[in-house]
Length: 184
Image (tube, rainbow, N blue to C red):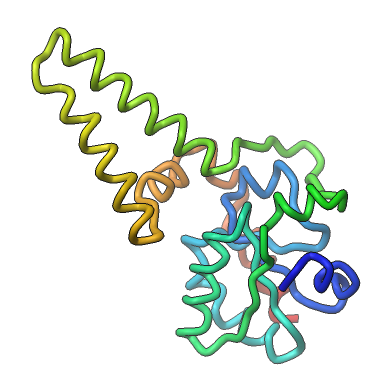
């Protein structure tokens, strides 16, 4: 689904944002429900109910995680479309983003991955001067990044998504509330 297709239908369909709670708090499409990709399996029944009432659109920062989410939902029998270009494209088109009052946002996951990977590569190269062989850390990170590109997965992103600053400060009741809203 393109931004031009989503914008006029925004109030008539269900938008699910699969980014981390921190990314969601930094700004999301108005009315979007936050169901992080790693918790999507818990929302399948609610999303099946939402899909029964109308279209479901999945969004992330740029499209990679939403494509994964759409594949997982399709495997579970839930029809969903992804927003091409994600939240970044939505904002670039000049559309507003909602931000929860008092919520703190975090860097986008791809930015966090670049920082972590670059830091590990640099650390491995610098440490090799004192501890011969440490450069293999840099090689391992490079190999992991290459595998990430080929497989369209990101183990480092999954690990970073589990860090406290990327996790919700909400409770299980908040997730139940989101799932209840999705079920209608």
